[in-house]
Length: 332
Picture 1 (cartoon, rainbow, N blue to C red):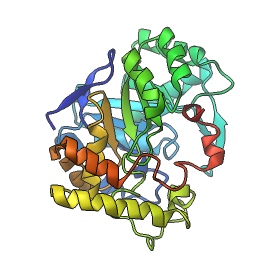
Picture 2: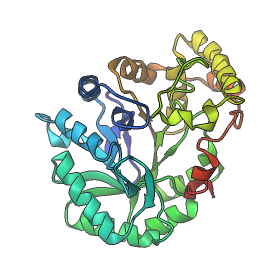
Picture 3: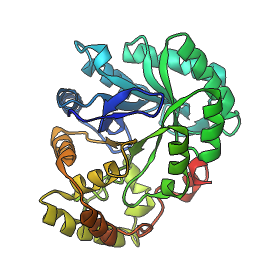
Picture 4: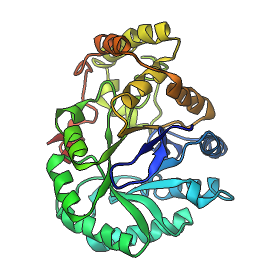
């Protein structure tokens, strides 16, 4: 993958697609360790330079998995993006969020050890801590930038006001936020704020957790530990409508000689050179299909056909359950 995009006005150049590693450790049921590492190797060999993780993905498992995959690789060839702050108990239950300055530095210390590295390329709070001014959190990360333990600062799932407050403390490289054909909330103001401030967008959920990847069926059963069991868009009453959108998109994809997933990824990438889609492949087959999205060129008429197939706001159900949406600064 020779195409590069800049991670905001202040950030580094990265591959045009990044790899989201969460599913290799958590949220979508059991994963195959050997296949996960093979997929990480294949992504790096294909030219992907941006790997995204979180210290709470599998309670550290994901970071250690990545560290294992990076053994023997040149550290400078990889950009590690890490989220922190989410609190979990030994059973994996959510306990809240902690972005106090001392917690920031403690979390970073453990992350550096698990990833077996001297620095993190992009470090970001996973959510806004309602008990801590974002300026204090960003200030603590800025201390770590000065100390050489962090190269760049990012944000995740926050709104325009928070982005502005954070950017006054330290340049922000990127905002990580959900963005897909059926999750287009950032177009209502957040994206414009990012562009005004020179902040890139690393878009996760570009296939809406597989819902618009072209392979999901109503009869498919998610495992007990699968996030999709609780996702409103996969529930009875919503799934039929959402899969109908996928079939409409499939018609466009067939005309383009591409898969549904490739068109969905290409659409996100087409929204601007400041947007880097994160593909959440857990297996090499999924990775190869997603990588081929970089070969899909969408004309104005193609984009119009996609818009007709999947109009903005057409999805049934929210991207998270209402209780979770209430805690998202990006949804306020």
